[in-house]
Length: 107
Image (cartoon, rainbow, N blue to C red; front, top):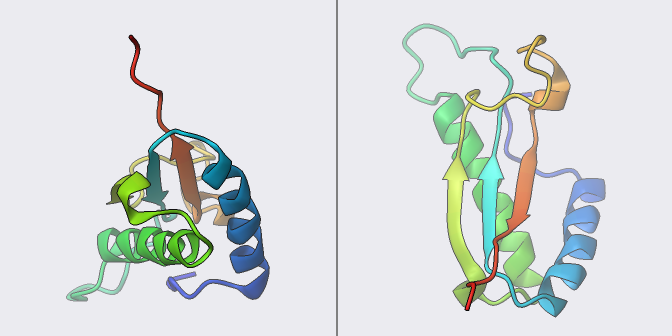
């Protein structure tokens, strides 16, 4: 909670996902998410920065494992605007990243 530092297990999982992503022609969108637990009043670091930092940490792992930077269409911090568990905004499951393979151009 409150950290963009990736667990080793998560890093290995993202690296495995990168193996699949590299084989696909699609561009990639990386999104970071947080739960709704706020930082203390007056904090200059918020869930917006945290979610963006999580997305960037994932971007770095994807690139380190061979996904070309040119395939990354965006890296987005969503803060607590898109919960995985909407009825439990402070649930730890809401602290996550998503890697989306974007739709190919239709001809």
